Length: 73
Image (tube, rainbow, N blue to C red; front, side, top):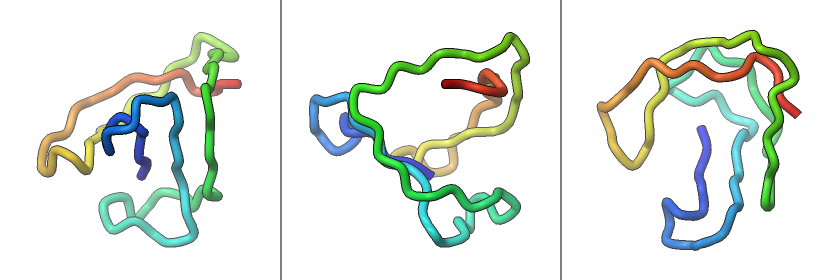
């Protein structure tokens, strides 16, 4: 689960994700350490994609099938 700055009305490229608790929406996902990114530049490391359902806490009940690079830097 994550929160992007524009979701809370802050016009910055800041994202905070992860945490130390199991998220009830994603009970089978491994825990990710809390991470803060400021002005991130995301670079795919390979062409392999992974797909899964994603949702947004701001829009409960709406999910979409999303493809993302398997490994990024």
